[in-house]
Image (tube, rainbow, N blue to C red; front, side):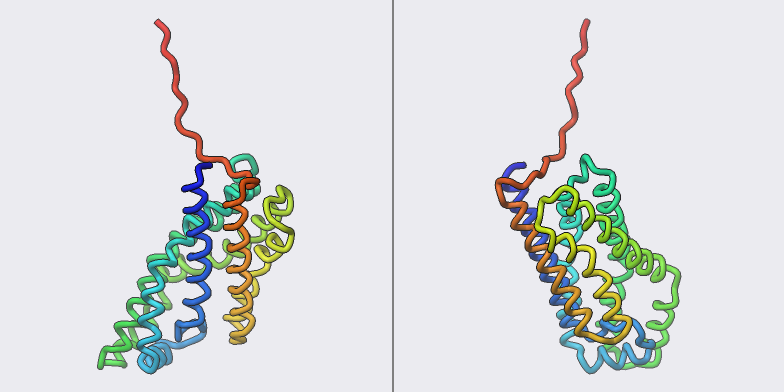
Length: 225
């Protein structure tokens, strides 16, 4: 793989991982058990922080190519386990972006709107909508399953140290447990593990020994008379 592709992959991994950590630390609505009125009140008190969290949605999009590079590093072109893990991580993330990013934008606007009661009602309707459920819950489940599969693929192909493979399997569960239990330190620890493992994978991409195969172009087919 040309160096520029390796560099692009390393940038997407480091920036995407760091943005994930920063956004969780900054956003005032990281908890999953807020009612509509509680959410609007929280965003109103921490409106600037919500604005920064919304701005971080843009660099967070780098997580999408990061998942593809993780899959390549694990051997997705030759391993069914690695390719399935990549699909479980990449496609749900892409599908979840519109409802999650849209909700961030709505929350930011709701914090500045004077009609808090109407905004709270809209927030509750959004959280109870099928679009929110379709975008969010399968993403969480497939993120955990895909990360476990990717970690196993890392252990098999050994492109990275074993601790990276183990961290890859653990971080989503830590993040979910921390968020759902309200123990913020556990979730922060999970996202810190994500950043550490993604940074290690970025370093592996840039090493000459990294066994990454560039996507093959279409074959030329000769036509005989």
